[in-house]
Image (cartoon, rainbow, N blue to C red; front, side, top):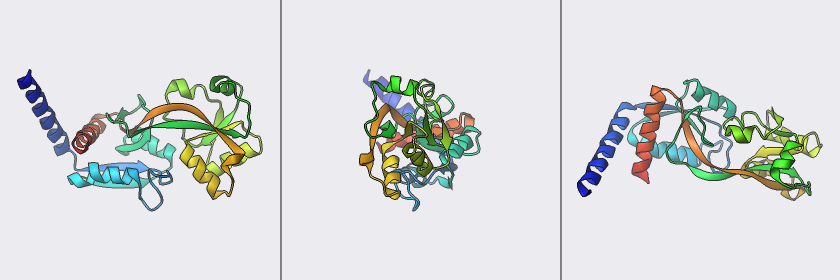
Length: 223
């Protein structure tokens, strides 16, 4: 058994080296307005991750700033290699190791009566920033009725003026937007929608598989 374990470890190491040897550059598309993850200065978890996984392994990273919906489309069509993070999706190759586990929220007006989230959603209309729910699992996406807008500020104004019943987003981005608009979070309630592992995603193609294998192998080394 010990010999078998050693053999498996050696195979994993060789596989990791083979994956790494094929990759010389990657194209990464990403928004730059995610608190903690990436900001307009290019700082945060995602840039640090891309540096550790790719740049520190002598792989050139071509970064392109795009809105979230466009980022997903670019990777889906093979015009870019990687974006994230998002919930697991069959449309892409997903990183073997989730970045984190995070909650998705519904922002509602203060004291909005909610028996259960499921019942509330069945009779409610919501709004979210363009592309935000595109990577959701189908079972969650199907629970949502509403439409997209260009900005989080527009979404919040629609909630305030009672044109919608909720805003779909993550808590950090909601809080950042409220702060930038000079509004207090005490005017609203945060309702948990669902909790999901967040992955980096790759184009579902032979090239995308190579980039994913490289990424996963490097993460194993870094853990």
